[in-house]
Amino acid sequence: MAEHIHADHCNTSTDHIPCDEMLYDLAELYKVFGDSTRVKILCILFEGEMCVQHISEMLSVSQSAVSHQLRILKGARLVKYRRDGKTVYYSLADDHVREIIGCGIEHISE
Amino acid sequence: MAEHIHADHCNTSTDHIPCDEMLYDLAELYKVFGDSTRVKILCILFEGEMCVQHISEMLSVSQSAVSHQLRILKGARLVKYRRDGKTVYYSLADDHVREIIGCGIEHISE
DNA sequence: CAAACATATGAATAACTGTTCATACATTCA
DNA sequence: TGAATGTATGAACAGTTATTCATATGTTTG
Image 1 (tube, rainbow over the protein chains, first blue to last red):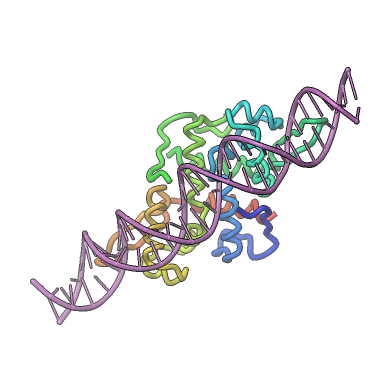
Image 2 (image 1 turned 120 degrees about the horizontal axis):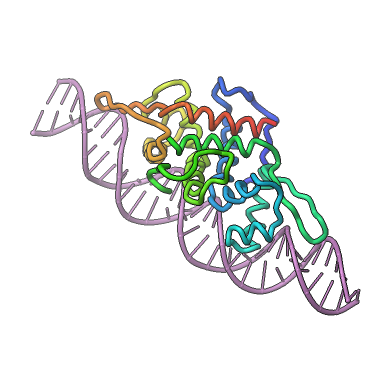
């Protein structure tokens, strides 16, 4: 999976068919949401920032696995982090995550 | 990938953390968007209904591959179809697809 | 500095996914 | 009915992915 998703190209309007490269990037973005562990991490971060260890405990997923997934979420610019001593706190990068997840929930909730 | 995504459970509000089963379904939904061939098919259907052969030609992807992907899109209730003689026309199931793709484009277009 | 703790990361592995190929199914038309 | 056309599908294969394990990096404290 691509580590970084850039978008300095093509039209951004949804009124036209997006170009190939944008659609590729789009698929890469959705791939990130296409794993339940990552979606769970994102939803946990809805509540606010959280350190790796806590996320790991809340999900009953190993610290290593969480760390690997956080790296992917970082790569997609969906989360940001700050270090405080030994601890690293992660939080949502912006409100897009909520919107995207909200869109999806609307669909499956019909 | 799950063939059918149901959502007759849990809260549908985005104000609360969705339950595990819903997050699993959500990830399954985003997995569908997480492939550029499928995203391209969906974007082609933005313009209106289209038969398998035409989709195949527009994407330079084999008829078989398109058909396989359409099956997945059908399973996720993202597309619908109607048969007219030998030809099967596919179209978007509803406007959620546009919204979801629009959300994603917003994110990568920053 | 050494020990303890929190996190990150590379390698290995098992499971999953998308395409291809061959072929089946469905429909029309001669 | 048989040939032609459009679509669907099962099996196989190559490529990808998420987790685990071992270990490295970074930080604090004694």
